[in-house]
Length: 446
Image (tube, rainbow, N blue to C red; front, side, top):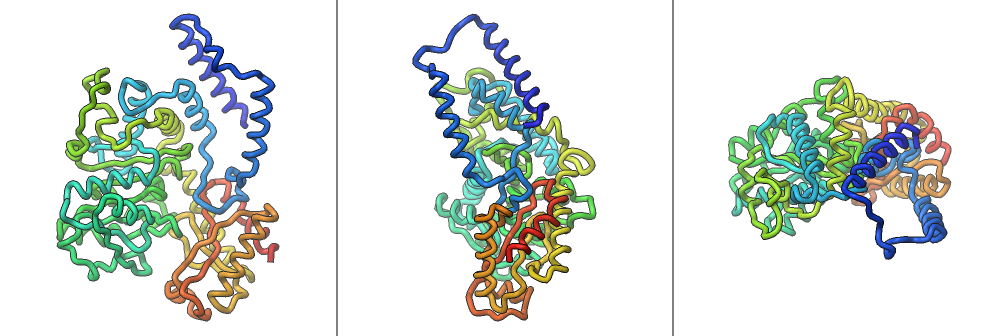
């Protein structure tokens, strides 16, 4: 741990301890005491158990969407956890509730909603999407909810939970929806994913918006993974077309615990129309009395929520602005750069071939020596297993329909319905200077 984080956390905890002491002297009850030798024994075993994890913080890990939180974010989380506020009602944490409102307001402005919106943090993107689709059902009770064949499985599952029919729309290779396959009159809400969790594809918001407006269809954006890439919308690193239109959507989901440098769990849901808050309206016999102001629990499906998550996110936004030139922009620029560097290197590799050019920071690739999709799957799994066994690199695997694979690579024999390729998520800015080493390690595993 860098000394600055140790110093910040210690100073913060000391200050909070002084504040607690100001209410009068007291001592924890003896039933809560644990002997030092027992605590040492258990925490030594705990440290051993936790070392069975993968090295998520190190750039050698380029597997799943597991990005370590910024140390100052978890230091702020730890500070707040010494109080353990609950952001359901102001009774449970007035300062952390205010910090949540301020942080969510900053996100709303970032996505173009301005000062008129409704939103709050959630435990995850799944819960945030649940709330978004719940509102979709309540505002259009007789209508279906549509999403692409590349959308996260959350949407199909949530439709099942909500007992509303979900419609899966096929997409073209350029990310556009095949809207001619849809009966628009039966659709109430269409989900558009900006940054799919498979390969980071950015769906064509610019294509569906005119169609949605023509047919009175709501638009929900699932930007759980990709949302923070909006900082690069005016750069030459990504195609900013869809990112510049986000404010046109009726609701947006983003996960600060992905690219927002936060500990788990921290999601966020935003609605353009604050009037949907009436759908959340409920009463409670013992909460919401501390203040006449709106309590976060009155606009959330969740009840108890970690105030520490709000504190950590608020702190992070004070340290890292949501802009292209400072804060999050430079961080995401390096993640994007890492993916592009790896793509270029793979184009010159004799052992690995890129599946397609990445749109964000997720890249798929496969062994060049294979002659068929079944061989690609077999060798990819061998490479994946060897890296894990040797602890020399950590990748992930991704299944692609064989007809999609053939579109990009027509020279390979199709002898199976799907093909398993290698996949890397370059979520850490440190990857930008590590991709050469990572590729060398992978190639040396053959």
